[in-house]
Image 1 (cartoon, rainbow, N blue to C red):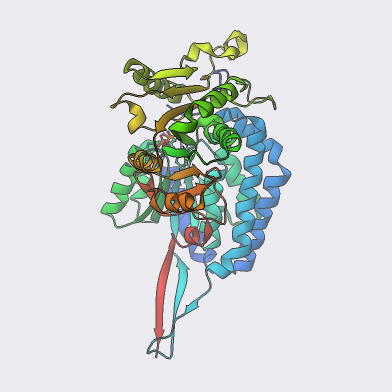
Image 2 (image 1 turned 135 degrees about the horizontal axis):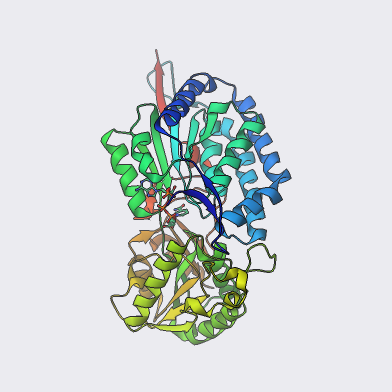
Length: 463
Ligand code: NAP
């Protein structure tokens, strides 16, 4: 696949982009390295001023940026605008807090003075996915640039206009040109870039194969990596939970970004005693969702980002059904109402789907369903709920609903995930570290932990 904007709602190719050649890549790497040598010494207050200016641009031009996101990935327009605003939030958060997060930490030893200091490491490569095309990039770039590193972005090939807009935001905000550069390249160029000696570390948000490939190359050269990969987050509802709130949140938690979120709730694990009620309410809410034009503010679910995503998702659904699982609603991509509208006949629409009654050995056990498909499981008690939740190879987030505090404490302790939310939906927040365990990856973004990933934590000891 080339680098292009293809409207996921209509299938129309709107613009093709020429990838950078090797000479252009080398020039950008040079520029990044040269900029780093000066940029690292620019006072943090100046960096914060530029970062706040980036936030202002994001807010002032949120409708324009929202439209680009909606156009390139089919994200419903209201959530695309909200994504530009959330990206401004992470810029402001690190502009305000970086000085404190990076301040020397005195430690008493046998020295007359000893302390920990946090220093930048240089050029950091970010390989990013299309699903939150602004947010994913800003949550990497804001801490990396505030720490004095410079960033190179290899964005997903289907979001070139988002990638270029982000580069422009940093430039207009005042950052030196080489502080943040977009490289319009396909994934075949990542190996060459990550192994270049000017690149000191890399972060990848995306699929497991992509993460494993990048990390193994970086590992051979002893370069640090952070991996934010897939998830099959459990959403546990116990008998004591507030059922109405749990069901409404279940819909939002599954359908965020038309179901294409790493931290979307994917496996709904419900205690037997309330499972019939929960199921009935969930099916009714699914039936009321509006699938359609992402530019229409009334739309709940837009198209999936690419035909490949739709094909992969449908294959998982059909395999489950062939093996004996039941579709309580949806399950057939031909069923989407928007297909009757000529303009959308070639769009990547998938109907809201709920699958249940899985026999053992279906993809529901160990695959990530990246789209508007909920997997419903019934369990007798909390022990079975925790066992089933932890049986997944992934461990990104977990949401659990209960009215009993001891149950909440137990779930928070025993669920194997990078984040556990009790009586709330898993969400990212600049103040809270974000990342996974098991095959969901390693390392953390956001919070104080995020800014410490790409720094030299230097020990200084003075007699
Ligand atoms: P993907 O295919 O892995 O693409 C992500 C990025 O990696 C793109 O820039 C892609 O470039 C690049 N890439 C693909 N194959 C590569 C390789 N072999 N070596 C180096 N780079 C490579 O992922 P996706 O399917 O677009 O995104 C969805 C996945 O991302 C899901 O699994 C989702 O859960 C995960 N995700 C995780 C988080 C998190 O924070 N944990 C957040 C969002 C998404 P091209 O576009 O040029 O192929």
